[in-house]
Length: 325
Figure 1 (cartoon, rainbow, N blue to C red):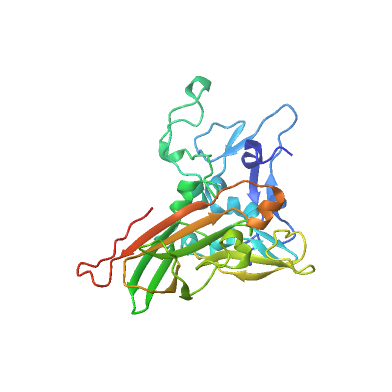
Figure 2: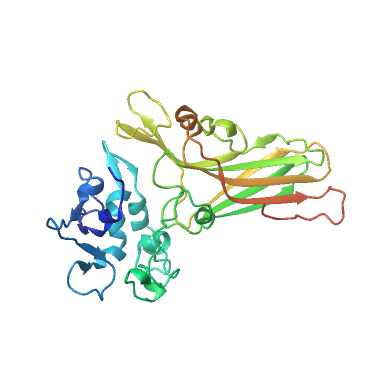
């Protein structure tokens, strides 16, 4: 009822995982896969990551610095469909391989160290510690713009091809140890590609993908979507986030860790003047239709952007001008 308070995490003692999969059991979602330690009435107990605590109310727990500590709340399988699986995606990626150069724990990214010398104020008895041992509890994630922008890279190239402009857009997952996006199936990352002539007229797309209808105000524009799309098995509603009902995965186009997605778009060129091309990578926390229904307010987050200007065809100094907005 109080949410995920300090007491929840610091009274976890162990995690129950299926030894054959390394994942939580389907019938034990969330806190059901945790083993907690409850102090006696009038007593207190905390488990934490420091190995120099004196015997007593506080106890050293190495588990708190391991990714499996996060597994139960970041894996969910309902009615046989894996709805969210950030932990499993990490587990099978290079980031989850201790022998790979990219190895990182969940805590490395979401609880970074090095920001303070104290985890308790000196006036409250806190002792000075190595900042590399003190983890931030800000938990940057899907609502943190800086964190999102460190996760993906966008590359844009364009060239003239007679009566068209050919555009190549590459998106790479450079910083996330799981798929992009991950967690709730409501989340989506959209690429929007635009081209216009020197008079501000939008060029018509003649080849390449367009954004699907469920992207709302962006539907039909040149671009593509990274998302896990669920469909309700009974009502056929899609996309749906009501995963407590039987659903199945209609499509999963999300970007795996360190993977690159490349798509080509061609636009009709009706004159030989300069052409401006722009690509944006947009993060949305939920589908626009559901946001409108619920009255949720959350603007788009631009994760990355790039522009290319193609000079006039008869300009001997024609060159691409690449910049990020």
